[in-house]
Length: 193
Image (cartoon, rainbow, N blue to C red):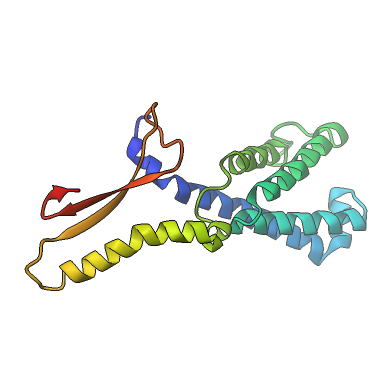
């Protein structure tokens, strides 16, 4: 890896990816639900199918964005995009880029790949499900509470040494953070403990 220090931002990058995918599908689903008759003509489907697609896109977009049943939501969105790709190739005979360069199935393929990333990574650790998980909360408390106490106690003007707590990834045998574990590194007065 050329820039290994960027790996610490993986969860933020996955959150941004999930938010972008969620925004696109939520707005698309909302358009289907808001005016199903007009949308059904645009996509050449029945009104019932259009309402179903709208609800599925809205639910899938919310699930991916918020991180609730993220992998199932990503699978649903992948299936919707594969159906759209199939229709564009075999029914509408649209090329990869389309006639105008933007209305082909390249857009849909991009969302299949984005959702595959979300599916295979679980969407990262910054999610509503993980925030509400008591196990995850215990881990966060174990990392953050000692730091908060130490910074309050040891930086309150007393003569005690400065204390810092740093959480860093634990590398596996091949140098990658395979298990997602972290170790705490305590520094007191310049010594590591």
